[in-house]
Amino acid sequence: MQRQHRWVGLVVGLAGLLLATEPVAAAGAASTTAQFINGLADRLLWVAVPVTLLTEGVLFYAIWRFRRNDTPRPTQERRWLEISWTLATALILLFVGVSAYSVMAHPSVTPTRADAVQTAQGNDAVVVNVTGSQWYWTFEYQGENVTTQGTLELPANRPVVMRITSSDVIHSVFIPKLGIKKDAIPGQTNYVVTTIENGSVGQQYVLFCAEYCGRGHSDMTATVNVFTPAQYQQWLASQRAGGSGSAGSTGVGSQAAGSGQGSASGESSSGSGASNASGAGAGNATATASG
Image 1 (tube, rainbow, N blue to C red):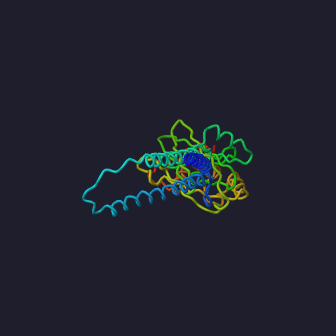
Image 2 (cartoon, rainbow, N blue to C red; image 1 turned 180 degrees about the horizontal axis):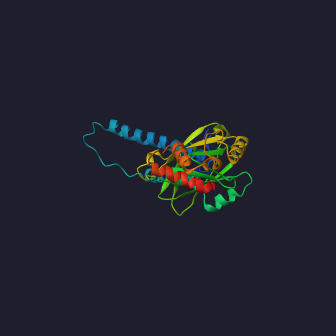
Image 3 (cartoon, rainbow, N blue to C red; image 1 turned 120 degrees about the vertical axis):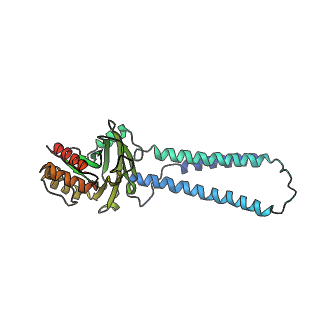
């Protein structure tokens, strides 16, 4: 009878484990990507803290209980105890592994090309081609005839697909507040699929290059501005009309004014300022795209 109760307890424990490993989004994050990552971290913390307290508690108890034991004796074999802690360890590792896989394999965290294509086909999807160059970022808003440097404008509550590549060396797009980190590799396109939450409207986030790419690496940053969908459409219209836009970013129309001005604005908005050569490259690239 006691053995049957143990098997029932084991089955119930496994069922609870499977339910607990379902991906759960954490509230208050700036994007769906950050929600899944933060949710995973929270669940693993709820497991790690009790295990740590239990382990350290047993350790300190043994130290205190046997501190004056000058004649230690071998412990007696307790098979049920050995089986118990082996099963407990296996269940914990299974929980960690399944939880991590269910989140890391989610399209909002690690999208495949098929995931990105499927999302981009939606009517509300925003597709941005992100190109890293030494030492600035170029953002081309696909289908909108708008290109910016140093400033990325995104709407909230709409699916966003980023197609990320590099024109020279390996870079890495890193937006900590949005939970986004993806390498930019020459000749290869990597993808980000996410949706920014409404609570991020009006917020500014920093995009870093997280892969060392030369002497201007530390200055290779960009600003991410989050709009409402209506504000985003107004900004696009302003850029197509040749205006500077409410966010102060440089659009296609204004960058076509001249390569000298284009390099200066690109260098300033990206914050690189690393060298005149990098600024000139930025201006020439933008002028070519606008033409």
